[in-house]
Length: 89
Length: 353
Image (tube, rainbow over all chains, first blue to last red):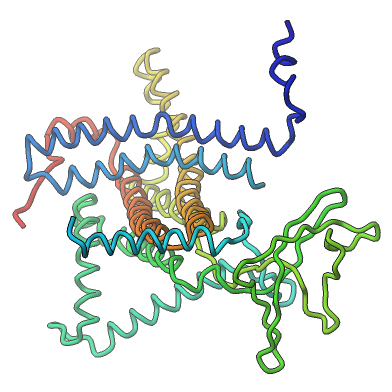
């Protein structure tokens, strides 16, 4: 039961360098993009809650929220950079 | 639907369609390191250094113009605008650091913010990435290189190579003698020396898309934060935050504090890396995004991405400056009063506007 052989049976292609590079870049960015929005969403939800309870504290809440979002986003950007490096370098 | 709206929508769709089907381009080459443009002696001047000089000249000239004939009540609108900008920034710094520390921190924080935001926004100007010198890419033996067919016009004695409207991609290979030649057999250079195919190395490229630029301001920010911490608290107290041997004296459970201190020391250094890659990733990826969007859908759609890049450039500049500020404030505060600070609830003091 050579599953791999069955998968490739109909095609005439091999796994090329460029092909696996594309797959790797996609996986890298895909996993990176999984967790970052969850973090950002949680942050923003809590910030909205805090804003609702105390609208006068808006500048401080907003500043700290943007700061926290930047930290979260940085991780996704690292993943993007790795994907770009894999694909193009 | 109103007919006028229908006409607008149809016009936009037509523009997009014309762009996609008529004006096809060549897939752009994504190059992470910045490219050298010319040599001054042994130094290869790169395109990002050129753009950083441009931004510096712009900032210096603006400050000189804004402070010429400075009056207590500003008469010139430029002075008024610059004052408003600085007041806004100083307000944020003062909120986080307190009035005494704000005077120390503000020059560096303000400079970082202005330099980064101007560099990022300058990167969206139309002359960035569009013209430069022609270069023939190096092709290793056995590999193929990519180039674009070029037409040459002569502006007086100066040959100008232009990518035609629907450029043709040319593959290059390495000949047995080591030179680069075209795979379709045509000569690479014409009889007057101008190239028939090549790539264009742009003269202007956004400053922070080169890895060295964010690294340089990250290092400056790191040195400044450590200097402020050491000068405010003294070398012994400041290093005592990281090498927390006093905690061991309180009992064996203090070993956790020692480990936490060492982790904080490591995180001080990791901050440099994190600053660098955050800014580099955002700006470089933004550049690649715009170039690729322009390649895929030449009209209308890239405007949306320019808007995104405006926003991202501003946010990343403010994040860099704010994070430096926050780390500086953390570095100069006394460790033992940390708990009292929280207990006293004096964190949020809102002054009426």
